[in-house]
Amino acid sequence: MIRRQRIGILTAGGDCPGLNAAIRGVAKTAIVRHGMEVFGISDGFLGLINKEYVELTEKSLSGILTLGGTILGTSRVKPFKKKANGDSAISKPELIKEHYDQMGLDCLVCIGGNGTQKTAYRLAQEGLNVVGIPKTIDNDVFGTEMTFGFDSAVNIATEAIDRLHSTANSHKRIIVIEVMGHNAGWIALYAGLAGGGDVILIPELEMNIDSVNRYLEERACKNKDYSIVVVAEGVSPKRKKKSAAEYIAKMISERTGLETRETVLGYVQRGGTPSPMDRILATRYGAAAVELIANNDYGKMVTLRSDNIVPVPLEEIAGKLKVVTEDHPLVMKARGMGTCFGTDGSIRENKD
Ligand code: F6P
Image 1: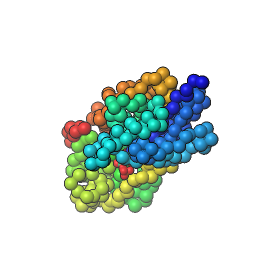
Image 2: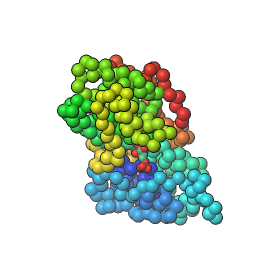
Image 3: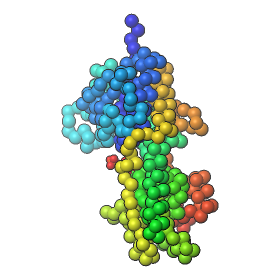
Image 4: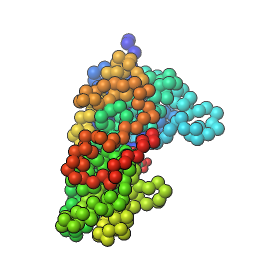
């Protein structure tokens, strides 16, 4: 009797639409194409620490493709973080290795963003077989053109911006909308462009509020009755308690006298059913991850490059961030059409 390969899957970090599509892509490919056994681990790495898991079957996968969130649950537990281990007799990584062996796993599929892939890499260095799948609405995972979750978030944010145009127009107001993205400006850039934002502010490009206000005042003088300002959450001034949107709206209204309102889109960008493109990308990533496992090809993350799924060693990914650059084609095109990025040409050094 040939022993069936046994895969563990976990979802870690912020949730996003498409996680269940990725779980389904891994598990169905493993079960149907390769006759493998698949176990879903609860709540990210916490489930490995507590040895909480369930076997995934074709029955348990039925109907999850279109479901938002993750049927496995997630957490932001970082097993290698010093404080996570405190003075416990056995470290969290040791416990993970012990439970990985007790579960008889041949490989661990880690679905997550930057932090998750960094932990996956460190577990690989500890001797576990791991394969990473890049997930996050932020789209800031290094080495891949796109993470799943991003397209859904851009769709949600764009629809919100479309709606804000009508109310801004009716009241002849400046509306500032804040989108997520952590320390990157990808959602703001894509949704700002798709939604016809007049001003797009992202953490990668040093923002000068006076140049924003000059731009808005010039628009007002040309009888442009309203303006839409799209700001990434990472623009918020670290030293202030205010959100980016509150801070920018305050600076605009106080210094120009233009009537201004703000909206923080928040967690709606992470909720609900995945877009069709995210369903497809998540499924492609899941199926490709299983092919690596079937070939005992570990220590890699599947990436999207020119519409091909390409495995890349985790050591090339771990700890790096993919951020928007000043010369990004979308930034250049938007500037050429008169979109304001609030810069006086300077650019913030990428600290990560
Ligand atoms: O990483 C996804 C994300 O939504 C970021 O855009 C955001 O800054 C962060 O998660 C919020 O973290 P939490 O879900 O822990 O509040």
